[in-house]
Amino acid sequence: MILSLNAWCRSVWGLAMVSPALAGVDLTFDNLSGLPPAEVHVMFGGMSTADFSGTCHGQALEVKRDYTLADFGGQPVTISRLWGGKIFISYGAGLIAGSPHPGYPDFQPLSGDPATKVRWDKIELSYWDGHHSGVNLSAADFYSIPMAVTTTRAGAPVKSIGWSKVTPSRTVYRRLVELTDGSATQSNCLVEAAGTAIPYGVSVPVNGVEKKLVRIISPANVRLDQPNPYPAIAVPVGSTAWITGTYGGVGGNATATLPGIAYAWQTYDFTSRVAANGDLMLTGSGSLTGNVVLTVKAGDVAQGMYSSAPPYYLSSTGSLAHDNTNCVYDAVLSDVIAAYNLGLVSTTTPDPRPQANVSGLPMGTMTSDAWFSRGPQYGLNPQLKPAWLFGFLQADPARYNRYASYLSSVTDAYSFPYTDKTAAPFLELLTPGQEATAPTGMTITLLPDDPSTLTYEGWKTAHFGAAVATPATSGDLADPDGDGLENLLEYVLGTDPLVAGPGFAASSYFSSGTVEWTCDLNAGATGIQVSVEGSADLQTWTDVAAECAVLSNQDGVKKVKFTVRTGGALRQMFRLKARR
Image 1 (cartoon, helix red, strand yellow):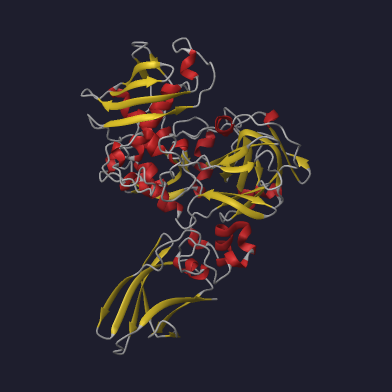
Image 2 (cartoon, helix red, strand yellow):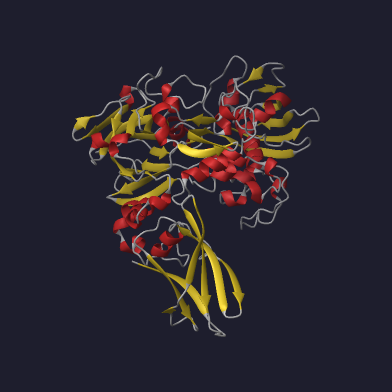
């Protein structure tokens, strides 16, 4: 589930006071997709006409209208209002023609909307002068187009979120498809390209047969009236979790079955346990609602683990099922479902965070307040990083959300999909009262499906954005992530210059008079000379003769073996050197 930015802005900060009108946010596009500007379409949608105001070339733009990057001519789009809406990006075709709901394209495989077969993705945005504003990539709904979003101030980057700039789209598609291979209902999450969309799809083996895909639906967004092809998250009988926290409240939104106090601010304290019949039962109380038992029936648990809103029953209302109405009970369920998805329930792994009040404690024995760092008892502990979740906590992959686990390794824009638990993948555009320093620009970068196709200059633009003009960050010999690899060598190795890695990774073999090592290189690196240097003291380095054999070349990665004849030298070190 992605929380709409309209709701997000209200729930996180509340309504803000209006400040003097601003000039607006300048939106620019970096098209590194490899497609001509006329084949990259843009639509402002998911909102009413009254919620949008934008211009380009001095001309007003419209909601629910198809544009291309060629229409913008490289000029920025100035947005003065875009409230709770979306910016849709599509390849090869627009999303309006033939749509039963113009401005609201459907992404589901079984939809009758022709936009379903088009490769498209979206960015959620809220910007309104004088109000808190922000942007996210909506990455929890599906995977389609690799993108990144960067906020800027006076042309300088402020913060960026997006997909991996070193992982090919084919690799991501393939890994996600593998989760459902063999399932009879696999087509419920895979959208195959058809007609004019075929050239823009990504070729992936599906059950051993190559198919062109334009989208993969997440397990949380498979239609509820269709079988979910993803493997169920294991919910063992007897597994227990302690759910405590604070519900922020939404006012007196009483329903016919729930009293108004269920929607008021309060704390909650529940114990979650799976009964022998498979029912998920939560016993406890809200500080205002009093004692109650919440039950998710066994037949709803499997799909419920992939949803933040499974139907549930209350002991106070008997056989009447409830759906998500944003009350305190939904907050309780959200905590326990997130815990199963992330692998926290019943884990014996010690807490890796350094705070004295949690460090070393078995994670499975802690409360949800301690996990999600919200309670007064634990203070504001660091959020649990993706590296501390999923497989770090559970040896059995069936005990966590495998879709979320993989995506957490290739994007920092995915909400896992529980935004307020372990990640907040949003960028802030405007903070009232801080207009002098708040970001006033935004760049959407369309990344290539195959990063190895980028030239060195394109590679720098993809990774550094506006900072490409700053030599201390983007220079050939700069090392902005501090991992000991200069930018030029990061390009050759196909690694991320802004994510510190372990350094140069290679497997080595030594024998009398010979040194061999194998490593992965960027198959598309051009205009760069790679050589081997040797040294006996790590001070003086000279070029040495080396043989280079290509062992494989697939998905933009070239595996090579270097061989150096040492001539019997007793002490010698070697390194790769990249030059232009």
